[in-house]
Image 1: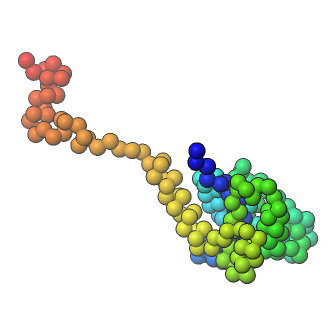
Image 2 (image 1 turned 60 degrees about the vertical axis):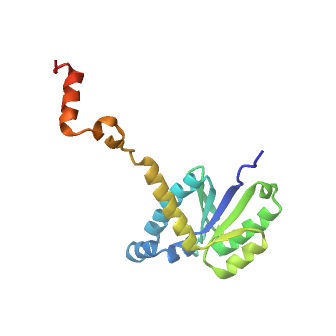
Image 3 (image 1 turned 90 degrees about the vertical axis):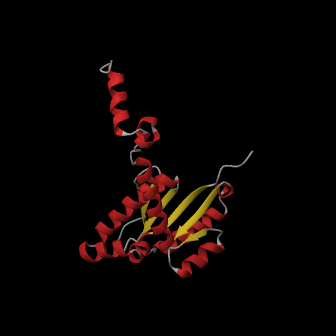
Length: 183
């Protein structure tokens, strides 16, 4: 019996992704970080649900004097704001180190989405897989496309019916016979 594919925990370096995706850069530059974060959260909500990932989007607290905050968006996506003086990189690296001794590692994949080369090398050392910001963008777009295709109404082609292969006069005569008008 074949094993089902391993479920995945996806850790995303939020500001790294915002800085790497041109559409989010534009939002950030024109409207600020909050709208860019919101757009990223929306995109990842749909992607995480589609893929069935346990996604954790991590943002630096950005010099805020606050403890670490977790905001559960959906069952597939949580947003973490690190505590004061902790970077998203540090948070992700600690999560990877902790996962290394977690029993879930036997039936879960751990994926880190970032384009930060130093962080990628570090988390691979802990056994995590890496995904670049560009690769994540491609996967998010592909998931959006597949969802659109599934939701698109399927039109039945009339060319599959025998009547459509008949000339217009024969079609009219058959219609009259069907309605009982031709005697």
